[in-house]
Image 1 (cartoon, rainbow, N blue to C red):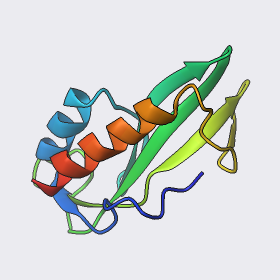
Image 2 (tube, one colour; image 1 turned 180 degrees about the vertical axis):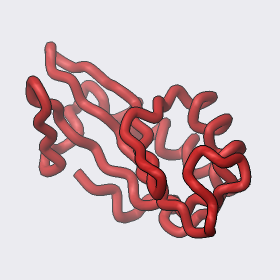
Image 3 (tube, rainbow, N blue to C red; image 1 turned 120 degrees about the vertical axis):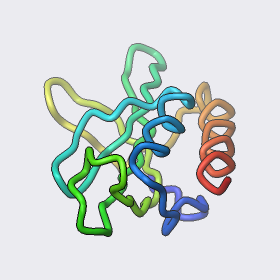
Length: 114
């Protein structure tokens, strides 16, 4: 599920600040390379793993882990994990997780816009 209505797309943050914000919100930077980072927050419902995912792309001339690297944030997505390495972004948020995911998206928007 893609959260098109989320107000994260286009927000720019320095890598060092972004790392602090995302860690405070419980996100983990799993996937990365020199030009982008993907932050995930894991949820589990009925024995199924899901992730709230947000990707940032470096928009200046610094490598990702340089403290002065500037990342432009994308649109959050909610994905279902399939063992061992599959992800499905067409799933809906399970009713048991809806309020948690909405609250986290609001926290994320507020933290990134500050």
